[in-house]
Image (cartoon, rainbow, N blue to C red; front, top):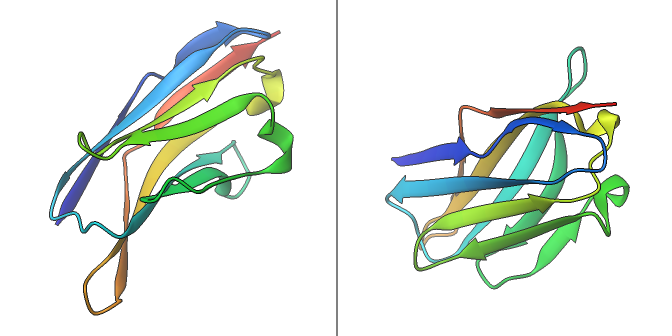
Length: 120
């Protein structure tokens, strides 16, 4: 089993910054991918950014140049630095871990979510 705990959400004015953290614990395999998703009221949960255990990153177009995803494999922790925040970034942000076992089977885990609210 894997547990994911997010922190760092809150209320910030447009143009401000926040840093989210996601601490993973449990049976984590070396080959895995982590990501941040967000879900605004009445909308689906969408990928914001992802990072593999090897450090390859991917971003949705709307956050490119503003958000930076990173991870510390030694601490099993992932981060999302969010700069130049916009009101449309308001959502619950979820941490995800796709854990790939030695047989290649992937099991996905989710954190409980952290609220990010950007005021105008």
